[in-house]
Image 1 (spheres, one colour):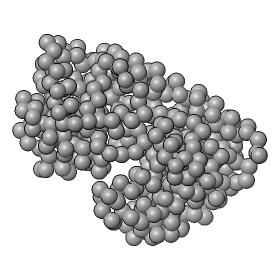
Image 2: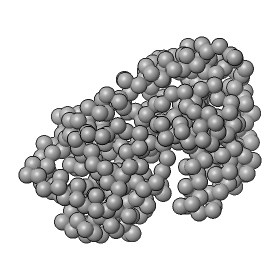
Image 3: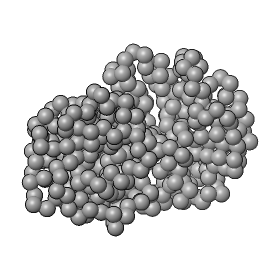
Image 4: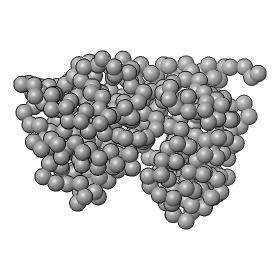
Length: 377
């Protein structure tokens, strides 16, 4: 069976954000199950040159603010007017049995999928809620994106042959908004790159690590954490790592807080710190960085939102913290131990059992085959 995967962003070369990591992991799941020769990729990036290479077709997304706004006002979230004909021709000549869309934002592009080819949408979140949060927390300048996202998502849900959500919460919201639940739940996955030889057995310094790119939920969460938690943990240090956070250095840094920002290799930081903090106060879907921290077997202090979709109850090394006092007490108790461990076996085992690519590739592959073989009613 041949599959076409359509996604946004150059995740083959850049994975600094959770969305790009999610795209990469889903692409790897498809390659794992169907094989490289049977998986085609149509990727929308802001590169200046359109290229065709093997099974990869790259369509340029304009970085022009005017053109992007025009696209939103036309009710489209991704494809500009000039690229619609190219996309239509590409889909018309691509020999596949199923097209997998990495987002409801592709809604109106589904019109160009040839008759008889199945359409499956992998929902990273419920876009109506995601972009509503952008408007509420980022300003009314995001309203055209919100409007376009709602229109595309509604069309995508209505016309998809199958829908995959990250967790039960998203599936329930989908049912509430559009009357159609997910046919499959596929949580965040990762290709396992953990190296036990790099694990530090003990830590003496009281240091905390925050990992995440600069986007509203991360920024609002870490601001709150610095003001309400670090101010009560005077003997502790916090290091912030993530794409573009260096631009917030002058605001966030103080004698307790160091902002690193963009780095080429996150693994160095995961191995070098005993604990991860995830003070995410609002959001949608599942947080990719939670699964990544679990892959490294890290101690995690996180809010309900950061743990949404993860089965962490009773797992030693994961602390649920929703108030400033929860963070203060749990962090203080953890670092009070004589030996501060840099590795939590139960956290690592949770990743291996529920979020490793090898486990979930077969589930997704079988689901897509069932969708293709399902008879029309």
